[in-house]
Image (cartoon, rainbow, N blue to C red; front, top):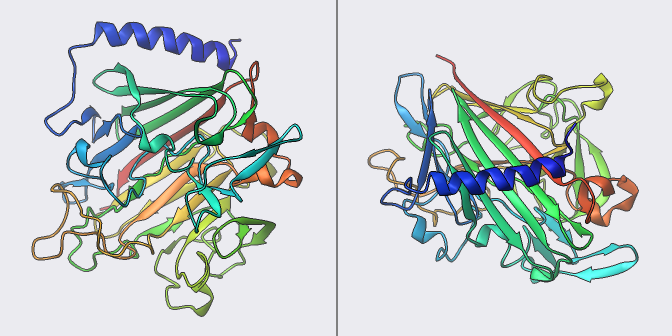
Amino acid sequence: MLSYKSVAVSLLAATSAFAQYNSTKGPDEDGKYEISAEGIRAQFIPYGASITNLFIHDKNGEERDIVLGHDNASFYSVDPFHPHLGGVPGRYANRIKNSSFVIDDIEYHVTPNENNNNDTLHGGPDGWDYRNFTIVAYTDDSITFSIVDPDGKEGFPGEVVSYITYTVTPNTWHIKMIALATTKKTPIMLSSHTYWNLDGFANDETPTALNHTLSLPYSGQRIGVDGILIPDGTILPNEKYSVNDFWSSPKQIGANHTAPELLGNCGTNCTGYDNAYLVNRAQNGPYDWRTSGPVASLWSDWSGIKVDIFSDQDAFQVYSCGGQNGSLPIKKTQGLEGRPRVVEQYGCLVMEVEDWIDAINQPEWQREKKHIFGPGDEPYVLEARYEFSVNK
């Protein structure tokens, strides 16, 4: 059986050869690369290996663009807010406490970029989703991006080579991320930082995503954090019927929006969600993530669009866009006539498949083999599948 490393090397050779063969296929007038299959159409850009548009037909047969992004690829690099729209945060997603970590008794300091420089978010001020990836393969239904992250970039030790492949099959978006540490031991944790609004901002009843219903069937626990969302070492119960209970039964994102205990749930003075929910599947014995059921499901009764998310990862970050304030525009493919063309507070939902956040600073969690990779190790691998359906 081939190792992941052998597969990754074979992928590089194959995709490089294909890129030369298929070199005539290029971006559209907005700088976007489109792939499509029955019932699904998606667009991507090299900047951050980002998804920019995802088109699904709703219960009335209308095509809806259900992810956030910009109309033109050129705006991503000059957007002063940089909300990580649809990109791959790396080389380490989410937050790193005190912008530091220890590997083999050596303390490393990475570049801070959040909370008055008290922590590092999504790889630092020049993390992966601030950079242009290289397209190494592009077909009608698949695109592969690659990046070489050099030793010392943003303070991280060692070189990392990564391949991000997006593929569509009927009604389904597939993600595969591979990253190889080539020279030194280093932390690696990736994700897809996609913002969702399953109504395409066209719902005439609400501009928000608080009407979306979420199910997290394996997530009876979450990672405890402090006021700036840094893990404090605790694992908290999502008690039945509490504001964080999405496991005992599905509920709308806004179901508990006026509950007093939701204040501070996403950080100091924040009302809503920005939480890493654990995915507890091990109790069921050996499982195949592809067939053991989705780790999350999200749907809107208004559009009828539903997405079931399957993942090989052991955590799932949910952010209910409480930080949006109307400064981020929606795209020309979205919106409702007569309504401001912006993302209002709670107008979206971010769902990140990933491992336990900041586990590099919580050694007692014993997640090292899922977070620290070195030369000769099997590569970091993340896989996820997003299956779309329509409830009429």
